[in-house]
Length: 595
Image 1 (cartoon, helix red, strand yellow):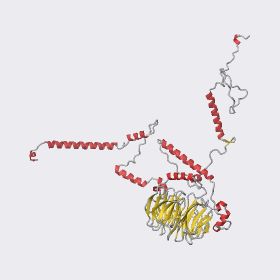
Image 2: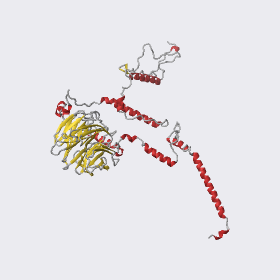
Image 3: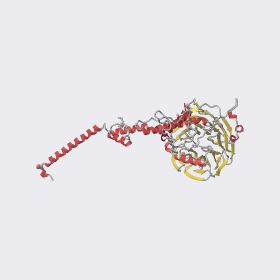
């Protein structure tokens, strides 16, 4: 029988906690070690640690492990840490702007906003430079065998050598009844618009050879032009300008625009520019249907016209050999250039807005640098060129009678022979390169011919601007966005970079007028800049209050002196009036004769 001092006490089962199950992320216990260790002071060291401290320790260890994993690949350290290097020339290609000079310290909110803008711009430049390597397509040109000229290769030989899809892009449409034909491709390069001289109009999805609409207006047609999308197009008929939809239904008849000969559409301004036989240049805003400007050029019949895609300036060729540049903001020509000794027959401008190519009755083809308005190269063509067209990659097509010749690198290097040549059945009346395709469309007296020109089109398109594969829903969304971002016609200028510059001459003249009006220069002395204070004491209101307290401090003495002079003059005037009243109060002997 046990004694009272050695009695066994059974512990209560309620106080015992259930042991948690083991998890794979828990660290295994080392052998020979016990969690319930007793220290020197008799306290347990394992179970008595606070739960929060244990969780923080585990979290810190986990973060350290993750941080180590980021710096290694497959358990080994990265031999090339950081992002990939981008060449400077590629960064310069996508450079948007220079870094903005940051304001003083007190404008901390503006400083942060400008810093974020610079970071976003730099990140966009880097991403565009990196993704430039991933562009799937590349431009290729036609290369002949040894001692073989590429201009001797026929279109039939090219169509037999290429794949089936590319070969289907070479075709002829025999339309001899209503020719000759003018043509225009849509901005996406998907749709083709044909207009015959005798009234025939056809809209075609030329890649799938699907006819959208076909009508005859029973009137002579001078020119046809797609508008902002393939849903509407404009037709310059004998008397007036008409707008049709893609089904051939007449939408508008604009009688203000009469005797129109040539048209150009400015896509970012939604402006349709027309020239007429009465020497008028007119602009129509197709988004609201209003005439923006009507300019009388006073140069006679206008039938040579093109646009500069870079700055939306209209180039007109005249019968006296000059080429004039026009904007809807001015009634006079911006620039007049004497280009040929005879009448100008055709004008074309490349997509960068740097070079202009002209052809005239003097049988010469000239290349001009528009930045300096100087001729770079001059070529003699035996029969002259009646139609010119420049592709997205810089190829120049020139039509001489029924022969179409294509030249390569006309602007940069001297050219001695054509790149390609082709003969059509009758005289060429219209010619245009298809965007994003190696195709040249030629309209002539016998119909239409689609030629294969390797290296003519831009291989990579911008899906947000002109997407050849967009759906109807995407086209509708793009149209809404384009209308919201429409550029006003007042912003059309010869140098678009001048829009962000300050007119120093006007500013100096205004400053001189202000100095003459005030009698002193308000900008001569340095302005007071309040010191930046914390705890909300540098708000806009408190800063303006402190500025008003010290405003005109340098003029206070002058103002005070002028006020004292005014008070002195007023005091003298009052004393003089007082003396006069005293003298007038005394009666004299002659007062009795006054009535």
